Length: 135
Length: 186
Image 1: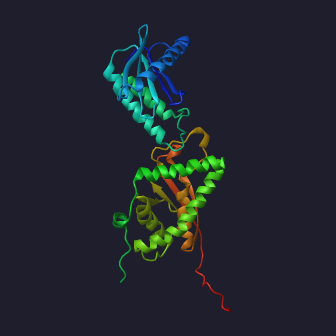
Image 2: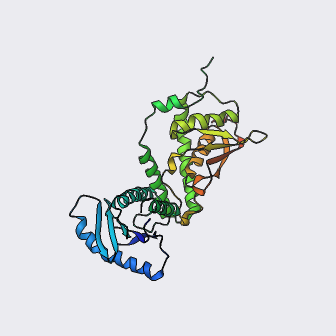
């Protein structure tokens, strides 16, 4: 498993709807803020890249020191963004695909309002399990 | 001798028109969602779902009797079996099991292991009091009322609240004698 990884889902309206620090490194408060900052900065790159390809998985699109940002854009333009320091691209791709499936399930829940925060603890547990498995 | 009442709804289920399960689930979900938005109070939504179910039930019973060929039930036990095995199968595609009879046979539980209404659904914190499938209890109540049985139907277990199955308690309050619709002097 990667020592550092931060995963967020950004809705089509640029609102973060899910965040998780999934790395095995010791949690540091300022690091978490830095991660958010890097991911936020990468959103512009995503916007430019998303329309140049038909693939959902955009691979590594941005880097900051030794941290890399990988992004997966769903058909509804929800962005799954992962900040990581591992180089395992296949694992990341599988991770994104499975989280995408989970996200669709959340979206199909009639009591979930699209674009609102994902509060489901079930979703959270599953995402963390996937992170342990693939990253 | 009259043909034996069907013990399962499989044959009828195979012949009725069906809709895509996801379309059905999402349509029901949209109704509940809209009710939550309109009525705001979870309690009100429960009531409204029950009322809607009742309105469905009082119509559905005719369809049920017309298509299922069940013969007249001699007692409440048989009625419960018919609902669980034939009724649920016919309209919902699943069968329920009947358990937890009380001593005098007026109250029982219909247990659903599988419920197509709740695929994808997860109750958020804001809707904890919601009986998502309350429409079902209304349907059963309405249908039984049309065949002269006053019942009270309540949810005992609900998977959305962390239980292991759906359990619907059906309690027979009284059997209304069939009334001749005209008065003598009319």
